[in-house]
Amino acid sequence: MDTYVLEAKNLTKKYKKFVAVNNVSFGLKKGEILGFLGPNGAGKTTTIQMLLGILQQTNGTIEYFGKNLETHREEILERVNFSSTYVDLPWRLQVKEVLNYTSYLYSIPNRKQRIQKIVDVFRLHKLMNQEISSLSAGQQTRLNLAKAFLNFPDVLLLDEPTASLDPETAYYIRQFIMNQRDEFNVSILFTSHNMAEVEEVCDRVIFINHGTIIAEDTPENLPKRIHKSRLELMMKDGMKRTVALCEEYKFAYVVNKRSIEVEIDEHAIAHFLSLLSQKKIEYDQISIKKPNLQDFFLEVLKHHENT
Amino acid sequence: MVHSIDRLSDMFYWPTVDLLLWGITSLYIKNNTQNVPNIVLMIVSGILLWIIIWRGQYEITVNFLEELWNKNLVNLFVSPLKLSEWIVAVSIIGILKMILSLTFASLMAFFLYKANILYYGWYLIPFGASLILTGWAVGFFITGIILRYGTKVQTLAWTAIMLISPFSAVYYPLSVLPLWAQKIAKFIPTSYVFENSRLFLFKGYVNWTDLWISYGLNILYLFLAIVFFYKSFTKAKEKGLIGLF
Image 1 (cartoon, rainbow over the protein chains, first blue to last red):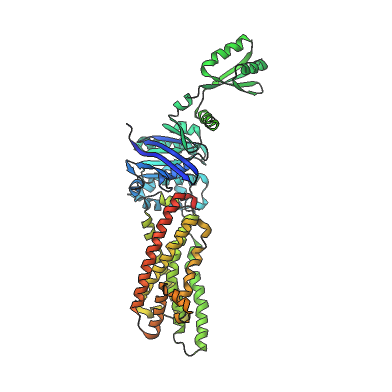
Image 2: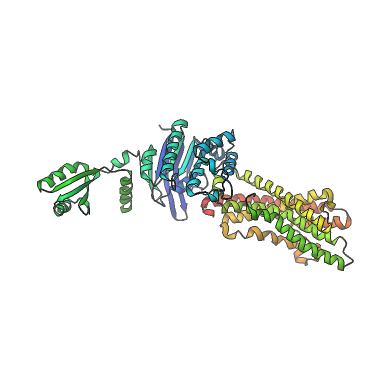
């Protein structure tokens, strides 16, 4: 049986008749990075707010380290932290003041050394005397992350931590997050709309839509649930006959000038290519795109909306 | 506060305006009437003692509003900070700022009108303690309302305390109020303090029974206000603290 550092059981949040989160249960293992994905309005932020204790759930329980959040709030929150691109910092304070007051809020030992270390990691040296209001969105995100790592958290809730960062900084931050996990066994709940990032960083992924978990697996296994690949052919001759063939066999397709992209089951690719050959259809380039997490995300959403 | 010019000016600007306006008015009254001794000290003391209530309430309410405006409430309450610790912290900040503001205004009153607040001696301590309790009670009650209804009712942070000022008899004896207002004043703890400040000014003693009544009322109101604040905080958590702004 898995032991979880964070476990949500039957979590439900209702606003009058609207159900924002519906009977959601999941666990976060020690040292795991768990992706929490879903479209806008799916219930991700609502769930995170409940996990942080700033939103009261209608039903269900939240446990960290085997202890109930409601009854052991302070003890738990000393070992937990959070960063969101969408939560502001006190805009009149300077960067050094924000780090300083955060270190007091979490009663961090050896404050000065810890702040110095975090400032080094998040490259905040030059910003220390600047007011928050003067920071760019990317700089604020870096500070938010610095704040989140300040108390050596055992569990971190990161809500789109790399949104608004330039690609180089985002890459650096992703590496840092993974290093922290490797070095300190930090458990991280990670939301992002960047599927490539989720594939790179997360050990496991939960998909949520309309407040309900609709899929849960590793980022590698989830796309395998889609059996359809995308076969792209750069046509030399026979575009009309290829289209006719697709319609005959009911394959979804998209025509782009000289190329055609066919959505096709992996095991049917060989048969389809032999049909093209029989009909003397010529193409000069071929590529097969295997489904990735983004394809899975879109497919699952389409299926979920239809049902 | 260091980065907030408006918060800094609040501490000094309004006491200065009040002292100039009411101090000059009382000088005029003093020069044109024979029967009211110590009129300047009476009015100036009213201004100075009112600073205590005002700062007690204002620091709690506006501190909370600042956290709301800065959307910093989430940062505070995702940390291990307890609500009770926040309450103690803003109350202490309230006392410190009140001392700063009162010292400034007292020095100004002394240099402008030769009105010395230290005339009350040690009685300043029971007077001040009672007044700041009232300020805190009003502060937590108003903050509770803001927690329930959000920033659309934020104007209460500046206006609500003024509702008790006519019944507190800050600048005049309670007896000049109409009978119905005097009955209301019996439930306003500050009225006992201001009446006692005048009693000491004119007769040299204080009525301890009245002062104890003011403390009794204050403790009751502060208890109720904090309970209301806690209940409002729980209610706000049902809607989500992020959604408060």
